Image (cartoon, rainbow, N blue to C red; front, side, top):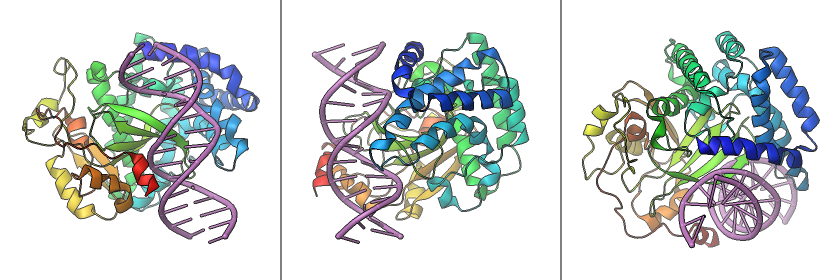
Length: 369
DNA sequence: ACACTTTGACCACTA
DNA sequence: CTAGTGGTCAAAGTG
């Protein structure tokens, strides 16, 4: 809550600085969007968000080759709103691609468009979640509700749809991810606060980058738990929706439970959580299975938790190198696992927190090596 | 003082 | 070997 507002303010401040080069673009863009999507006066928000996010990228990019996509991204994000949802069709096939590339937002599903149009602020989606940390303008309560409802509906439509096909992965992933975040938050909004911890863990963002293939900037998060080697990559559409989440490593601790988890509906949470025993690492049963399967190669997975929410976890195959730290960590022999099972479904509360002793070795070390 | 985010720069890997 | 890319670090800033 606070964060959002503050951020929004901050954003505003920041904007002037950063935006210099691209400002004009933004506006034109925003205008376009606004025009296309809708002309609600309130639209300002989206603009602000965008500006907030983008400025930096746009501005700095020149210095090195490094950020090729940046400028685009900025716009991309803008346009992305529509885009984000649109992938659906695009996703050509392969599961893998889903992870790596995101189809560009060429097409937008009609439904999406209509929704957006109606929503006008579509941004809201993300906002619901605590995560929206990034730049979400504060929304009125009403707005939230509206959005949430709309979102849910929209999501439902998309998800439910027969797509079912695994191949749709990209789409599904996104959607699912969205659901994951949203549900928890909406339901139990409070739990995590700002951080993108819809999954129940606390994450600290340690980096963000515009990835070439993707429209959205990718954010890198580490689990804040002391020894926990788990990292995750999150790509978020400008509207705050999560386009993609990739978990790396396993949590060697149970989810930190926010002081109050029960309160809200926690719809399926309870059920799922049951299985968590004290011993249980965060690794869900299925995760283990996954590990076996996927081990070397990356893989994406989908699961339905008790609730019925689809849970997807993606993890990178790259394994060996990435995990080296694991060597440090020792624990994760396998591969990354998604904590999702617990996270989404509910909290798995494990009583056991820190299993392992040694910290993950400084990433540094890894580099040095 | 602490925790976290932001973000440019650096490093490692791969084609 | 070079260039491109992704992942991570760490300083600066914010709350």
